[in-house]
Length: 70
Image (cartoon, rainbow, N blue to C red):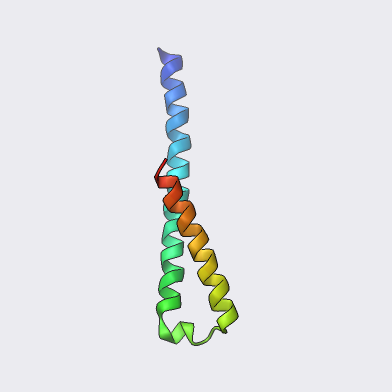
């Protein structure tokens, strides 16, 4: 019974680390997206940089959304 509890504890820690990382990624993606939408910040970037950032945001969003569906 104790061994079973220890196994669940290890799984819980692993899940918590993953959930924390995904939440941090989601927060970062939201900040980057808000930065692109901010005219003052966005006007300082060339169109190529805006496209790269937008593409990366899309990839990260798909990763986050895909992970939440599991």
